[in-house]
Length: 174
Image (cartoon, rainbow, N blue to C red):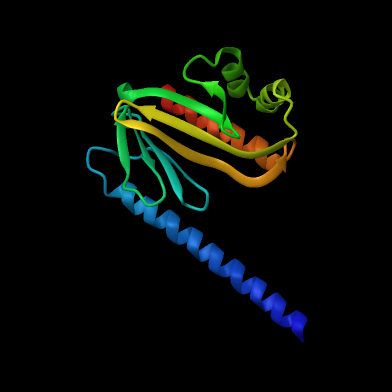
């Protein structure tokens, strides 16, 4: 009988977690929809809706929504620096990504990630983030991956790295 209670509790916890994630995403979407002089053409919600990034390609603007904050809209010209960090160690910086960025765009992200991680002899990864610095902000960190530890070869690591690079390039190329 105890087994049935445990299963029921797990199902209930999964349902509640799912509802919270949907609620966060809807809340962030409502924040984006309420912006004036910004139309989100492309957007992503991360970490169960705790973070959001959006682009307005026509106006050359991007929007960042961090946990517990209002949306922050920036013009592309305000962007000073954008980095992809793995475990708070900058791996791809600004527009100087060169061949690595080409590999990411060309679809060989796994090889680029492997080469970068091998250069620092990493076997475990805790986090992957996109760090954005503008002329009006000292730095915003958008989490794409946040775990205790994951093996470098875990699919979540590759997926988060690809997604962070994808958004880095999108913002740079506005």
